[in-house]
Image (cartoon, rainbow, N blue to C red; front, side, top):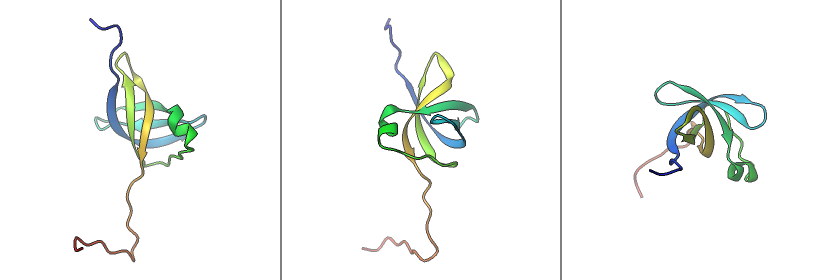
Length: 87
């Protein structure tokens, strides 16, 4: 038996921004967790916005808290930009 469990990695959507780099993130199963930015993301001055897709690490012993380890803002296409599959 191992003394340290591996963190659970999941994706979620930022629903609310709170002070001190905290945010409420909704998971795909509908649960909402309190998440904080990882030190690596704080160093790179990553700014989150409501609706951003984020990758989380959760401790298997406390599923109400998480750490945000990556952020992927939602992709938007501007009206004048055309996308095509042609080279």
